[in-house]
Every structure is written in structure tokens, then in C-alpha cells.
Image 1: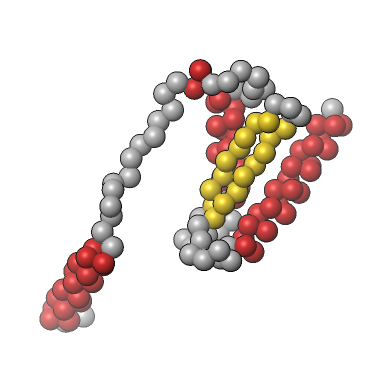
Image 2: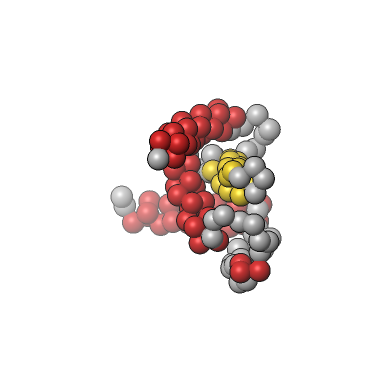
Length: 125
């Protein structure tokens, strides 16, 4: 690439970044949300906070089945005391309500299969 062509490409890139910033500035910088006092959560939980956090991290890892930035999964695990069970909530980012339904359906089916195997293993013991 000739120097003039390279300079033109750099200027074009800088102009594009500037225009994008003017069109969509970040309203607020990302912030940290640390867990400070998880010892004071409600009693009646079977899982410790650390175990629940580790399980949520594992499920989130398994949910990341594609590198497509249009479908980034989010996972939440909720322990239900009566009857004793875990509820796994899945979400993906969407531009429109119908976006991501196939991704969610696929994740739901895969997690049903995984949890069915784990339940079977638990019953065998």
C-alpha cells in the first residue's frame, strides 16, 4: 500500500470513529458491581453462595455456543427452596422481540438434556 493510500485509510478510519461517537456516545462507563455481603442472604439455601456462583459460571460458559455478538447469552440461577430445585433463566440480546428465539430454543433443549442426565445420575446414586 502506498503511503498516501495508507494515510487516506487512517484518516477515513478516524473520521468513521468520530462520526460513530457523535451518533452513539456511551452514556455511562461500565461499572463494577461486587458482591459485598452475601453472608446476609436469606436462610434456607442448600447451595452456598460460592457453589451457586460457580454453577452459574459453568452454565454461562456452556450457554456460549457461538461467537455471534448478536446473540450473547445471559444466565441466572435461582434456588427454589420448596420444592427444592434450581431454576435456570436464559436470555439473549435482541433487537426485535422475535430475534434470538431459535438460539433460546436450542439452548433450552441442550440444557434439558444436560440436566436430565444429571438428574438420572443423582437418582442412580
